[in-house]
Image (cartoon, rainbow, N blue to C red; front, side):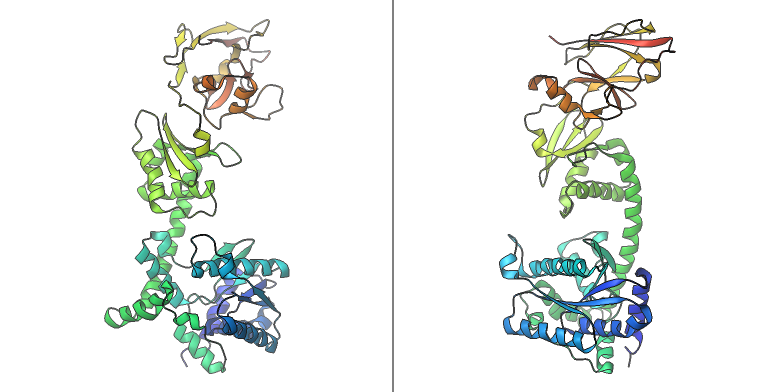
Length: 473
């Protein structure tokens, strides 16, 4: 028969790519044809591999007596082949989240249960019986809903699920081969009556749309859609690697609690369009893990970068985040952090020595800079400082959310400028546009408040820069 030996070999090849001989696994078994075939294939492979396997059946709290029958059937099948069995029960109707369909909720709760069981038995791997037909259906559904290359990659052979890896050993196996192997082995299985219910989108795709496409357009539609997924997955992996490299160059996170990021707009715009979108997606996914960011949200951020003008603008991008276009940077920050803040009204000013007073228009500050011999006494006034000549070039600019300084005497520990402004009792309406002196984007001095440990004047320095900032009236 066409499936003889093929199923076993395909399962063996997939698992050998990803597992060590001592791997502990949890196998999700519904009792249907596919999962029963995978369970018996693993029964034949476990002696040669040394893998440890626990069978898990998740009862969803729906379908009444039929679901009870399925749970009892799987438990008995596992007992017959001497595999450990754990049954888990969830209550899908009661545990649905707001706006969640029963189909989506059942899937979410099923995976949660599998992760719990894997943790209980110390398993590193969870196995499911998705096959090539499932892959083709998934790709087609995503095309119908709208998708990109990542969506066309369909179901992944391996992905992370909590602390475990989720592996699908039958993903490249056709359902015809699975059914043929079950027949040749004389395997019994149960039918889930909900699989014939056309209230579910996937069922309609499987029962109506796919057969119609096969009859009227392409008898190999399943094969070609699965092949498309494989090609798209390879392209997607390559593009993601490139996007991660670009991400490291153009994105900076300033706070450990993921509240503020800055994107170099020139660097981002220099990237190909495909990488621009992927870098932005990586930023958004890091900002809000677990959120599926739709295309129009990603485009809102990209548009703010590409269409940046010389002014300052802010816009919401959803899920409590906003982007602010400012001074050649695109800042992503919590929308709540925008509340009560006004944007700076002056641009960064290069510090040019011996040029006389530098007046910052719109802020009222005047900066005096001159070359100086090594001071015999350092000033007590915090609006005056001496800086090593190594600090050139220097810039005076408005502080930005996420800016930090490593103050003198704190052994390299840093503080947020925002905290220093608060502790220094700077009035709220004076904080916006408050100046900081930087060298190579290192904050050297917060006039009137804090001096950094960087670029201090050393005992053997004969020359240095003397700076004084006069406060606005």
